[in-house]
Image 1 (cartoon, one colour):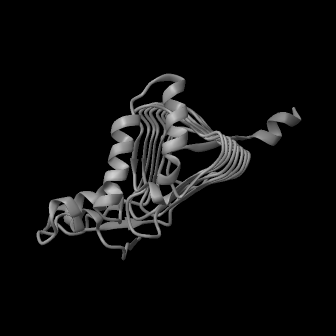
Image 2 (cartoon, rainbow, N blue to C red; image 1 turned 90 degrees about the vertical axis):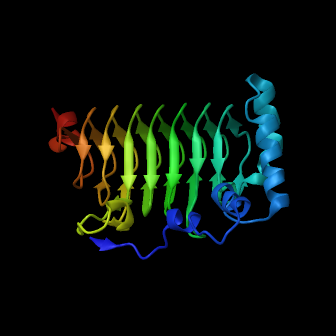
Length: 252
């Protein structure tokens, strides 16, 4: 494992010479001044928690300029938390359910991209820390999931992700030294996570950094995926092991 060379966002927030307002702007927007912050804050204050169809229509209209890109017919539920929206792209017909969090914090290379016709269900968190998350079109993300990236997280089209799934790309703490706290030792990555097309992840699956899951694979509920899974595999367990090839099952 190679230690990340990227700067620590956490450490930069503790820089004592910077004013609290400036730190807050970097936390929620990444860049910009007081005017940009007021524009963001007013929209969130006035519109974030309006329920029903009225809230959806108003957020469609007035949130658009916050994002890097916001496609047609996007549905944004109430209570959504948005950080660094200028690094977030939403395709056509994307639906983000109530109380989700889209947090694209980090450097200029970080960001979140959600493809057309994708649904992100209630209470789910998409978070980067100097990383990227890319979800291809026609995918379904269940409720109470966590997708976090301090490296790269690439998800192919037609993903089916059940509730309470945790996908962690990069962001593991180094812990080799015992003379300083783990939190001060920086982060390491095994290269991110790639999930292929047409994959189904069952409820409470955990996928760790450095893993590739092939196209058309199925991962059973409550599994821990810490090694590559080939295409068309059915795998489950802690750690997940391949128990069948879907193509062979269809031949019988």
